[in-house]
Length: 244
Image (cartoon, rainbow, N blue to C red; front, side, top):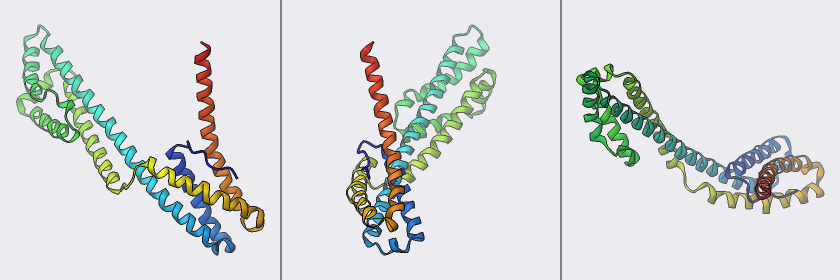
């Protein structure tokens, strides 16, 4: 059996560990001889625990990334709102200029809002939206095409950010270590304890361990193939760039 390549991605390591743990549990249910294998039982218990921690860490990282996306979305809407109001102020139509000026006087109070911390920006956006819900502001918004849509979009974006922030807080609360720091001990378990053991037992007792070892080997090969494919693609790109 080949060992898992160390440059495998954390998500691939997570998928692999989850897969071989499922295979082991299925084997325990179907193979009474494996049930009595204390070494495999203890080793796979460690793999399962590390895999669970890795899954949690990956979820936290994903939640953090999603939070960044949601923040960028609301920032872009704020920029569009300010740009649209500035454009309306410069139109030589008194009624439109007056409405836009009123709204700009509100938004100017929140200058620099997009550079604030996530928490402070959320608070300021909610305050801005409250100011924009005043009667005179609502009248001005209704008179300017597209502004109402931008305000509604900002409201929706802030709600989405709040949900993403809740998900991030939940995931972070459960996270104990970074995904990258968990990958190494997980691969060590697989490469230094499971692979050598199953390789030996497949030869010594093929009737008991052969099928299970082959299934684990297939999962490792699948993960390794993904690494090799990326590596080959990178080499091809590098070669192509050098030949230009």
